[in-house]
Amino acid sequence: MNTPSFRNWQSVQTEVLRRIHAREWIPGDLIPNEVDLALEFGCARTTVNRALRAVAETGVLDRRRKAGTRVAAQPVAKAMINIAVIRTEIEERGQKYGYQRITRNEVVPPLNISGAMNAHADRPMLHVRALHLADDTPYAFEDRWIDPVVVPDALAENFETVSANEWLLTHAPYTHGEISFAATSATIGEAAILQCLEHSALFTIDRVTWDGDAPVTKVRLLFGPGHCLRAVL
Amino acid sequence: MNTPSFRNWQSVQTEVLRRIHAREWIPGDLIPNEVDLALEFGCARTTVNRALRAVAETGVLDRRRKAGTRVAAQPVAKAMINIAVIRTEIEERGQKYGYQRITRNEVVPPLNISGAMNAHADRPMLHVRALHLADDTPYAFEDRWIDPVVVPDALAENFETVSANEWLLTHAPYTHGEISFAATSATIGEAAILQCLEHSALFTIDRVTWDGDAPVTKVRLLFGPGHCLRAVL
DNA sequence: CAGTGGTCTAGACCACAGG
DNA sequence: CTGTGGTCTAGACCACTGG
Image 1 (cartoon, rainbow over the protein chains, first blue to last red):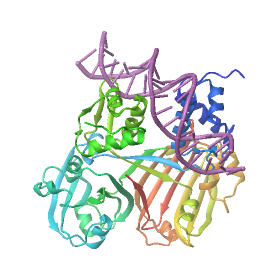
Image 2: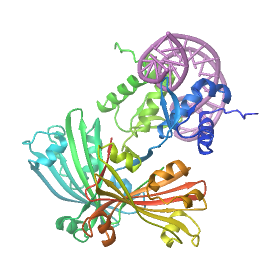
Image 3: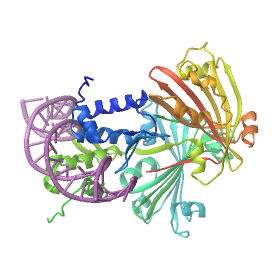
């Protein structure tokens, strides 16, 4: 067995994936430990570790101290979704970006909004509604709530030329957030804004971010009919 | 400046994130190089490297050889989506999983299917339609095409008790794939299967996988109204 | 060309959890 | 208790790319 030598972690990773693909290592199997693999591959254990860690991050391997490393029986497909600023997203597709602010108010949000943000139910918030356009046609409707206690600067901004989507990135840091994707049926008002039929199926993104315990912003993005979000596996 | 010492990469990562959050390092800024940070933090450069690499993977830092490491001006939010087997997904929510195969045929697929799979347009494929149920109510409709040349074993399987969703995981390895998310309007047939109204907005996942150049399978999953996919940021 | 991140190495110690 | 992965270290060389 004249094993070719594996001199970097990427080649070790490739070899590991090959063995799994070729069923040399069967799903559920325990594979050799790092020390043995390092010996076999003729490299340092650190290098094997780096490779196995990378594979494990994709869900193909399952690693546990003492228990060792196994080929995942039911690998969970992991897709990395990149959510960029909407303007960038449109411009990268070679389209012309357009923006229209629709409304801006300071009101007490409905309970489902303050609830989702984990915020005080009686505190007024900044409510901004706006439309993003690609090549002059409606692309996405942004319905956003901003907590003015956490982001006081937002009160001085009218969001007429800069979208909240973009402005918040540079003015409101957050520590963590939640995002969810769904399909919703266009209300008559949404249909008018997006220039589509009532009850059209709209791809929807809901996102809430916090800075520690403090709610920063909650946004719902409604994309025009036909929109889809892609990723690789 | 009595810097506490940072003895592991996680604490270095935390400190880096803190500085960005606290605006000590402004978006667009060049931050000190690894050697300097290692000196400041009192740890090895390897440790700093590990921490910065982890932060860069989340999109908060931008690293380039020679150019150095910068705080991303417009960080692209990255959400990791885990797509598990549907049965597992349902059972993990404490619901009872149910499955019904609807149809199974060997036919030449329509052009949009063979096109998406990058397959020969005139080759017959295995077409399986099935319904997944949670607590006896329709959860997702699976409409799948399988290339029998690539997965010959599939011809011997009737998919009456085991879903293709699950069977393929252990019988058809793939090297890469594409996934896309969208919202579609229920046709009358789909509405009947999912027991919802025609034109309901359905969350839809399309997935195609390949084994090298060879197309393995293409699946469209239509989820019942109200379904949503969550992730953390 | 030179400075930066990218990686490898050999060895060491540690934390966790299986048996 | 002990084997496994997780991590740190110091030093070295390399690859890329900006100036």
